[in-house]
Amino acid sequence: MQLRGGNGHGTLCQMTQISPALQAKEPRRVKARFIAPLAVVLVFVMGVFTVAILRVEANIRDQDIAERTAAVEKLFVQKLDKDTNLMLATMRALMTNPSIERAFRDLDRPALTRQLGPLFASLRDKHRITHLYFTGPDLINLYRFHSPDEFGDEIDRLTTIKAKERQDAVHGLELGSLGTLTLRLVMPWQRDGRVIGYLEIGEEIEHLIGEIGESLSVDMLVLVDKRMVLPEQWQRGQALMKRGGSWERFASHVALAQTTDRLPATLDDPTLQNLLTGRTAEIEDQGRSLHLAAVPLRDAGQRHIGDLVVIRDITAMKSAFQWSIVAVTTIGLLAAIGMIGVFYLALDRVERDYRRQHDLERQLLRVNAEYGRILQLEKLSALGTMVGSIAHQLNNPLVGVVSLAQLAERGVDDPARTREMLREIRSAGEDCHAFVKRMLAFSKVSRFDSKPTPMAELIEDTVLLFRQTENRNLPVEVKLPDEPVVLTIDPILIRHALFNLLVNAARATTDNGAIVITVEREDEPAQGRPGWSLAVTDHGQGMPPEVLEKIFVPFYTTHSDGTGLGLPVVQHVALLHGGQVSASSESGHGTRIAIWLPTSLPDSAENKSRTS
Ligand SMILES: Nc1ncnc2c1ncn2[C@@H]1O[C@H](COP(=O)(O)OP(=O)(O)OP(=O)(O)O)[C@@H](O)[C@H]1O
Ligand SMILES: [Mg+2]
Image 1: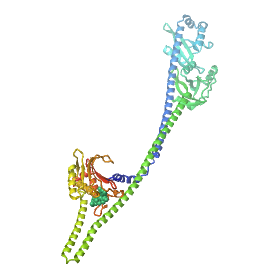
Image 2 (image 1 turned 180 degrees about the vertical axis):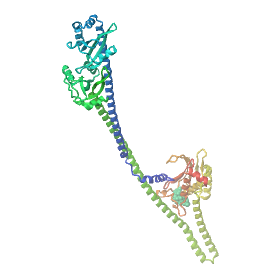
Image 3 (image 1 turned 90 degrees about the vertical axis):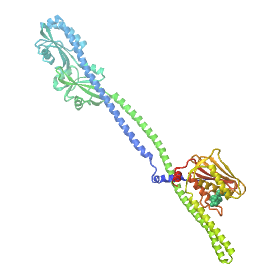
Image 4 (image 1 turned 30 degrees about the vertical axis):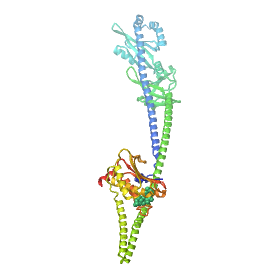
C-alpha cells in the first residue's frame, strides 16, 4: 500500500476560490440567446437582399426603357433626315429637267401631268411619297399631284412660308388638314437669280413609326395635342386611313398613328399625363406588363405638337426576374435554414458542455464542502488525540511524581529510600521536561533557512548522530548517485527529518535487517516537476493499511513512549521545501518512506528563507 502526503488538496483550494462566483450562476441558455438574434439577422439580411434585387430590377427596367426611348428619338431623327435627303435628291433631279421647268413656267398643267404623272405614281408606290406640289412664287398652288383637282389656292403652311422667307430649302413635320403627320420638304426653284416658284415633296410618317418600332422591339403611338387638330378633320383622316380611333379616348391628346392594333385599355389619362411629364409608367394589359415612356414631337416650327409614346412589353423580362427572385430567395432561405441548423447543433453542443461543466462545478463544490467538513472533523479529532496524548504523556509521570512524593513523605525517616524516591521524582520530571522540549522542537520546525547543501555530507552527519542514539549497531547502507548531489535546502530541517525516519526504521527493525538510504533523481509524479527523492527503506515489521493511512496525523503513534510527531514533522519539513512525502509499506516486509524535494525551491519557500 502506498500513501502520499503533501499539498495534494491545492487543486481543491483553488476550486473553492472560483466556485462561489459560479455558485449563483445558472447554466446559460446559449441556444435561445444566439439562435433568435441570428434568425432575426438572417431574415433582415434576406429582406434587404430581396428589396435590393427588386430595386436592381426596377433600375434595369428603367434603364432599358430610357435607352430604347433615346434610340427611338435618334432613329426617328435619322430616318427623317434620310428621307429628307431622298426627297431633296428627287427635287434636284426634277429641277434640272428643262421640259418640266418650261411646263412650270408656262403654268402648263397638262404638260406637268404628262411629264410627272408616271414619276409621281412610281414615287408614291415605291418610296411612299404622298405629296408633290408645284406652287407659284406668290404661293398660289399650280398643281397637287396627289389631288390634281385642287389648285389655285394659296399655300399658307409653315414650311412653304419659311422657304419663301429664307429663300432656301425647309423641311420638317407638319400636321396636315386631315390630321395626318407629314414630313415635308419645300424648296424655292431659282433660275437666273429669280424664284420661279416652289416645289414641295412630302410623305406620311406612319411607315417610319412602324420601322422604328420593329427594329427596337417596341410599340409606338403617335399622340397629337387636340388643340392642333380639328375633330372633323381628324375624323375624316381616320376614315380615309381606315382607322377606328376615338376622339374621346384621351382628354388632351388624340392618336394619329400606332403600331399596335389596339391601344392598352389601362393606358388612361392620369397615366398619360404622367408620361407627358417625362416619367415612365408601368401598366398591366391583358396579362402583359407594359413599360411606357414618351418623346416630345416637334413640328417644322419647333412647336410641341404631340408626343411619341414608346411601349415596351416587359412580360418576359419581369417573369424572368420574378423567377430569379424566387430562386435566389429559396436558395437563400435554404442556406439560412442550413446555417441556423448548423449553429443550432453547434450551440446545442456548447450548451450541453456548458451544462456538464456547470454540473461538475456544482458537484465539485459539494465535494469541496464535504471535504472541508471532513477536514474540520479530522482536525478536531487530531486535536482531541493531541490533547489526550499530551494529557496522557504528562499525566503518567505526574501520577508517579505524586505517589512517589507521598511515599517519600511517609518514609522521610529513611534517607536512603527518600533519596531513591526523589531520584524517581526527578526522572519523572525530566521525562516531562523532555516531552515538553520535543513539543517545542516541533513548533520550531516552521523556521526555514535554505542553502546549497551537499547531500552526501548531510547524510553522513545524520547517520553518525543516529549511531550515537542507537546501540544495536544496525547496518546502514547509503546509495548515492555517482555525481555529487547538492540541493538548496535547510540542512538542519532535512537532517532532523532524516533522523526521524532512521529512528522509525530502527524501531521497526527487530532483526538485523539493513536500513538503506537512497538519493535518486525523480520527477514529481503528479505535475512532473524535476526533483530528487531522499528515501529510507527498512526491512522491519512494516505497517498494516489502517496504520499506514494515519501515520501523518499528528500524535498518532503505535508506541507507548512515542509522541506521534516524528512523521508529521517530516511531512512539514518536506512541505516547507515545496516537496512531499510518500510512504509504502507491507506488513511483515518493511517500509519505505521517501521525501521528494524539487530541484528549485518554490518562491514561497525562498521568501520564508529570506525572512527567517
Ligand atoms: N519505518 C516504520 N516501520 C513501521 N512503522 C512505522 C515506521 N515509521 C513509522 N511507523 C508507524 O508510524 C507511527 C508514527 O510514527 P511517528 O514517527 O510519527 O511517531 P512515533 O515514532 O510513534 O513517535 P516518535 O517519533 O515521537 O518517537 C509509528 O508509531 C509507527 O506505528
Ligand atoms: Mg517516530
